[in-house]
Image 1: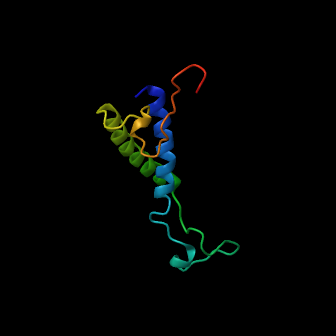
Image 2: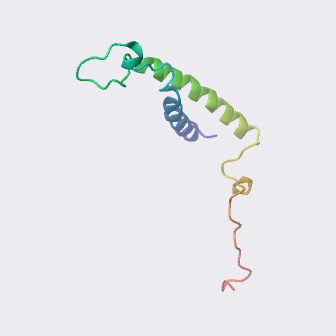
Image 3: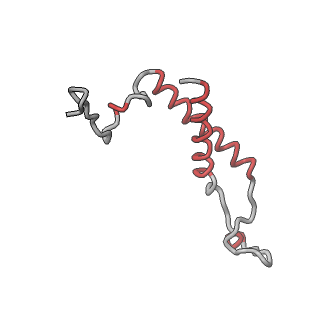
Length: 99
């Protein structure tokens, strides 16, 4: 994989991982029994974005290592559309007129 592809894959995997880890450990104000006036009762009582970002980074790195392993071992080639079971077959013409 090229450097650009690796960085782009990491960014996509990081955002997916962030949305996966956001609900982990979330506790609403109702669960804590302390609803602050003027806030939504279902809002989180405490939230640590740094902790969630670190968890997302670790998960994204894990998925990236798996992706690089699959690509480098030739088990998965993102440029080869013949591996796609839903890919439509290409129609190739036999002559230049396209008949």
